[in-house]
Image (cartoon, rainbow, N blue to C red):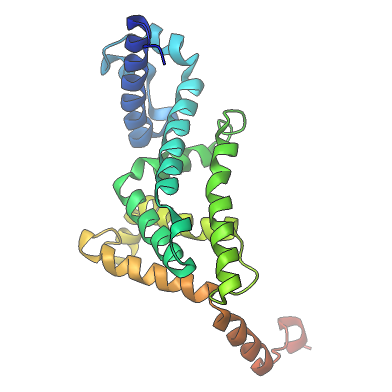
Length: 233
């Protein structure tokens, strides 16, 4: 492949520098708190160059989102879950996803900001097709697990991804309120391994065929409780 010309290399470096600084600003102050002129002041470029590269503040934020999503998708593919047994694959996916988010809190914080804006920047930036890769990977793991009898029927790749992402994101976005309300340091590094063991056990327990049997037993033993309206008649 022919080498890129010097001007293109310089532009690529400039874009990368802008994205790095902008990600920090959007992470720390949110979309509306971040200022393009402040981002420019911390880079080896100008406000005009930022608009040249990304078109607008919206374009810059969308590029930051695309960058962090691309990074975690690449990381997920590097886990090589298809080379592990189904239960080992789930354990690895859960544990490494939690560790990834702990090491890259900007992902959860940028996504939180995007959700407050009704995901407007994700609608047209091409992230959706890329993000489906992890769902397909997990669907394959679950299918293999059902074939070996390790997993029950029902749960899907997207449901598993949502559950694990929910745990990982909650640790980042809600650590402050949990500490303020309960005095509980949810992200204390000394308890990370313990928490990951708990999360792995939760996911494997949910996927286990035994959970179907427990649900059936609970349904058979359930006592009908009258509704509030019936109770007051």
